[in-house]
Amino acid sequence: GEEVAQTPKHLVRGEGQKAKLYCAPIKGHSYVFWYQQVLKNEFKFLISFQNENVFDETGMPKERFSAKCLPNSPCSLEIQATKLEDSAVYFCASSQSSGVRGTQYFGPGTRLLVL
Amino acid sequence: GENVEQHPSTLSVQEGDSAVIKCTYSDSASNYFPWYKQELGKRPQLIIDIRSNVGEKKDQRIAVTLNKTAKHFSLHITETQPEDSAVYFCAASRPTGNQFYFGTGTSLTVIP
Image 1: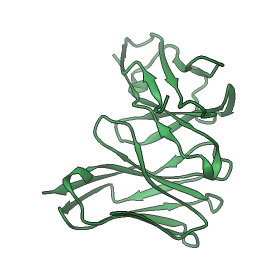
Image 2: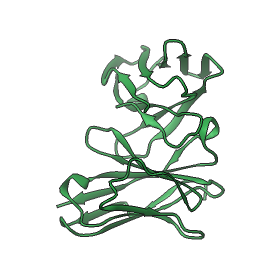
Image 3: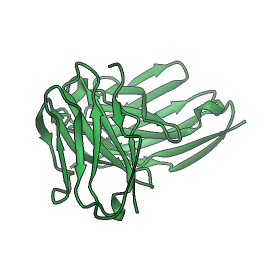
Image 4: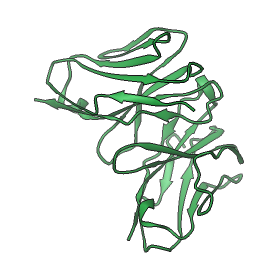
């Protein structure tokens, strides 16, 4: 597709429940990035992929967060046992290449609310 | 790691005036600097970017300047319009491009 797609738009979970978010990158883009945007507007980098391989996972809270990008499937970000502080908008972005040529295009985001 | 600081956090200007948003970065290896505009409840949209081999880039009413020596870059919006009201984010990326390092955002309000 011509735009990054994310589903669902909104997700409400009780504390301790699982949440799973999906991202379809722009066709032909090899890189996928996940960011968490909380109330203060700051973007926190979580993880990036080059095709199905993890490229950088330095931002991932590994004990509860996991992510995958499998061939011919949307990428996914999963949060096991959600906490109140996980409430945020999760953005996915994709790019054709990395580094100086790697303009990132963002999806519409998934707004996660943990009650 | 890279640290990007952005100022001001809020900015109000009269319609028709200019707006300037400044960012500094810490990693001299960073070489790509995009600017994103995010309207309320919407996705960030790339509005302009600059690579480290140039000092200035313009696109109609929007311009970005880069000072590599001082490690700062700025967004300039001239003849502001109410539809320019949004949150603007700067970012920096290293050559390996594992991630973008974002500034904390500037909420711009253009007063009609």
